[in-house]
Amino acid sequence: MVTTRTPLIAGNWKMNLDHLQAIAFVQKLAWSLKDAKHDFESVEAAVFPPFTDLRSVQTLLDADKLVLALGAQDLSAQDSGAYTGEISGRFLSKLDVRYVLVGHSERRTLHAEDDGVVATKVAAAHRSGLVPVICVGETAADLEQHGPSAVPVAQLRAALAEVPASAEIVVAYEPVWAIGSGQAATAEQAGQVCSALRTALADVAGSDAAAATRILYGGSVKSSNIASFMREPDVDGALVGGASLDVDEFASIVRFQAHVGV
Ligand code: 13P
Image 1 (tube, rainbow, N blue to C red):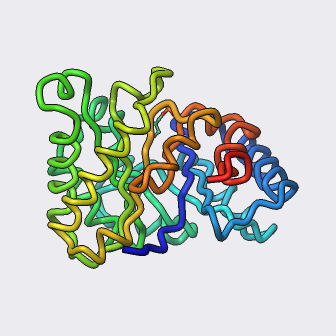
Image 2 (image 1 turned 180 degrees about the vertical axis):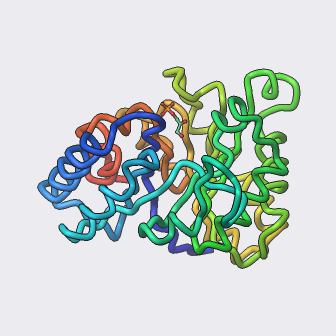
């Protein structure tokens, strides 16, 4: 089937760069991509700064008419009310945030977010008009015990429990053992799991939705390995952590088409 999935390169800054650093970084990134005549329509680039940076980055993107997309790293399962410290998806929408990470492995591990919490956050994102980037992935122990796709597929099915089949989503396959380890999955491993995720999506949401949904790979992505991932038919982009904090490196990942001839 011919699809029109625009590749998405997303930079998850995690808890790095304050709002002043964020402004300087985004300006430099936009100049670097413009200088290189990057075609933003052929590869979408998005940054996911900490909450406290979002307003500053939004203002910059708006003032300079920059076509970088803005994402947040988490959201509340609730829309408003007595939830001290939480951030509503509605507030994020007002800041022109388009994407929001849900179920990143660091949230699952360090903040005890289980599949039920992830499903309610996916629903909250959808209610607020945000596109959830649903993060799934197995640990090294899961891999040994269940093989490569079982855990990510089960996590994806659970995450979709509270949204209609028509909800726009992005899926990010991030094997936990590959995050921040410098040891990326092989392109073949990533391709196989992304293919299994697409099959599960077709089962849950229908084959048209599955064909239209972008599935990203994440885990030690760099400019030197992005090309191999992007050659896999079911990999539609990357969720980049460490390498997204270096302007030249991230710009080079976004421009993977220019230097590898994919
Ligand atoms: P690294 O690219 O640093 O491995 O991080 C991946 C990640 O967790 C992105 O969300």
